[in-house]
Length: 163
Figure 1: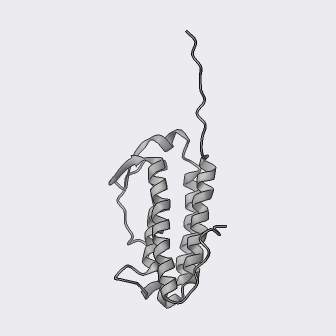
Figure 2: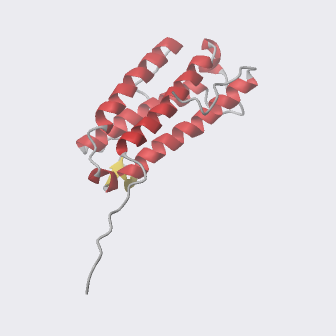
Figure 3: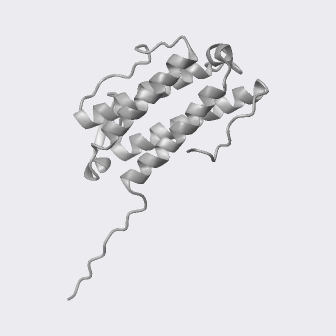
């Protein structure tokens, strides 16, 4: 009896996934930049949170979650630690978190992407699913930002221009 070994072909590398995610982050940053300062913090549609609060949620998830995954520390989720008052402050934190994401993402081995991790003590899924959630959540909230910008009469950035 002969057996044939088959190699598993990888659809996307971790470097490509990070590049894809950072492309989304670049676009979300441009959405933040598109808002007038006052509307960034105050404007909403249908009772949804202002875009600054949505951006703070994204900031509060990605870097802290990756740090928890790498250090195998399960800590609760909190949006209270960062309360920006200006667009400049929000963008500076966005940029610093981009570096945090790069730092921790690059410490996750290919094998760890398949491991289950209890993110924030609430979401027990494989690491890769948690990371895909971070991206999906950002795309969802950015869509809300596009709606806000259009309601304000502001043309949002083209969604396909991520870099």
